[in-house]
Length: 283
Image 1 (cartoon, rainbow, N blue to C red):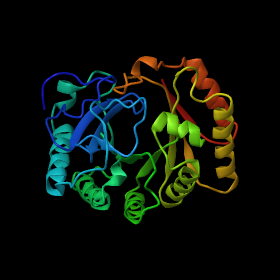
Image 2: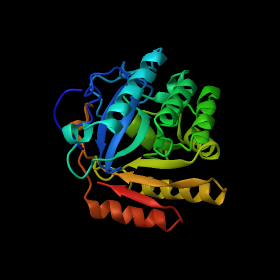
Image 3: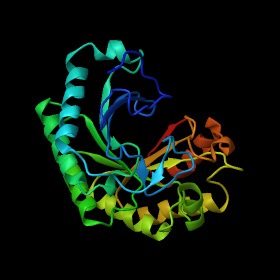
Image 4: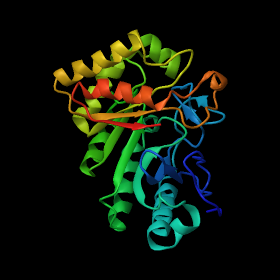
């Protein structure tokens, strides 16, 4: 890995010089997250206006070299837990290993190899006695109705993992505007319920100022109503990860996007908590 300190504003997925595996300092986690990038081709089936991936294109994850991915994960985790890696690369206050996260430059569930990725990662964690480490799948949830994605969530649940499911809007118009999601909010709701039934699931919501707050008026009402309906139906949601714009977007809308002030996020969090959900706020 190249010398120098990681920081919360730079999530360069090439920082370790590896194909699939990369470390980042996570402001939400308060420590180091080791990421698995299943879309090094920078292809995704969504295009979120706040996405920090340069050169993003529409598409799906390419075929993966699973032996290489497993070897890279084993090598980086071994280096982190057995050497002076933290002192060389991580600022004070963040020198702890928090999780392994399947995320990256595109939608991970577009890879049909995702179940085997999870199986192999679980093997590495067991080998290094890191089973207590958080194991997270970060997803836009759009493909969780497919068999391979549900198989992956079952594997993840067996490894005490969890899902972070993106929900920036509960309306068709809001999802099309923010995420370029054309499948619609009904599919989002169905897939969110599926995810929560298969694996412990947190909702992950980005709020930003784009010609006004992205969750206000009808958008806020629809979002809170969806959460209320899911809870009333017995959907076992873990909570909401509510976060603001912290790093510059690499999308054409970047100059139009602004971060909302922390009091605004806290006020929305209070409304969500009133429904009976835990909320964790990151600014």
